[in-house]
Length: 281
Image 1 (spheres, one colour):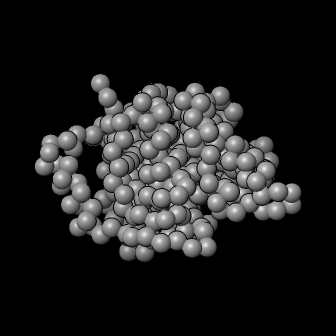
Image 2: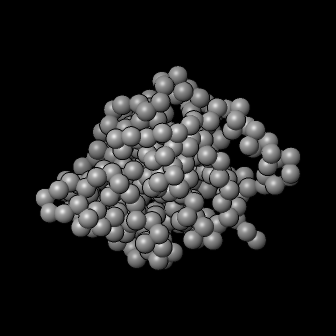
Image 3: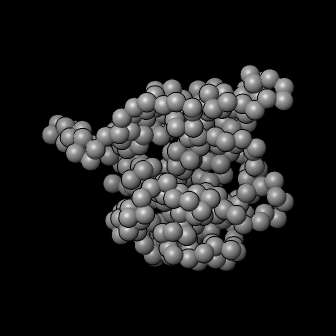
């Protein structure tokens, strides 16, 4: 039986972000993916120039209505980054600044998060959603438990400012999973190597891979997160190696050179060698 995903995210003509970052990896892993493009741009906004359109709520509804009228709107998962199981990457902000209008926050808290089965906020987004600060691992666990109480069975804080026991060259991610809506069965920490470059589309890839690997390992968050993060590490390593080679010695790679090497990473997406191990808390 096919596993079908409806992915509602942004789209770019050139590069990998939003649906472009999520669709290919999911298809490689055997998922059928239907896409609704909430935004259509020439490229991501980290370039000097970009052009395109943003669909209105009515225009998005019309697209879904067409699917519904043909009775082909049955999905196993709904994946959304900027807004049946729902995987939600709540794109609200990072580094202390919001990406979206502040009046959207109550909508995420009251409507989006309660409808989600899996949620992948960064530390700033997790703090916004719960109204709690994270300054220790204990705080992070409490925040994840609060997010569980809002609805999602799986919570992964994809990045944080917490110190890693491996040193400042690593960032800390944390995850928590409960089954049947009652008991937390597994909580983990991952220490992920930092890379001195700015990548776009990695969060979208993370959410898509977490969807895939939690589907394939539904009762093993540790394994799902290890495979998800390892895919990211392989793609980023291949991307930065290529970008530095093309940019030349002592030159900072451009946004175009730092576009994710997704197609070239097909084998790593299908069967990632584990390069980051999760610690069970």
